Length: 138
Image (cartoon, rainbow, N blue to C red; front, side):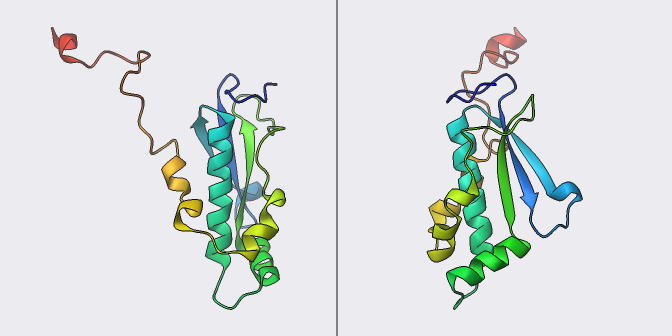
């Protein structure tokens, strides 16, 4: 198992878990395509931060926010894609959850979509794919 900054064979995956029990095995989906552990961890952190904020309503105490999140929110696990093993150095919500509940997040802190590898296109200079340049037609 490789828990360094760079991806093991197959990369990193963030597993999204439904805390309300509405999904089979509580798994909502696996989001793959993370090239580094730092990228996967940043996505995971923002995803949970957004989930906590979606459970917050005005006037709630931090404890009430946590209670709502544990009942209706979504948690994550950072995993190695190929082996499925939970990453030892993967971000875990338990380390920051009480801080999240105690203080509202900014828009940037919640913006997991900006880090979603499904929305990020391949590099312009990617040499692994077919040549789509003008000379390819030639």
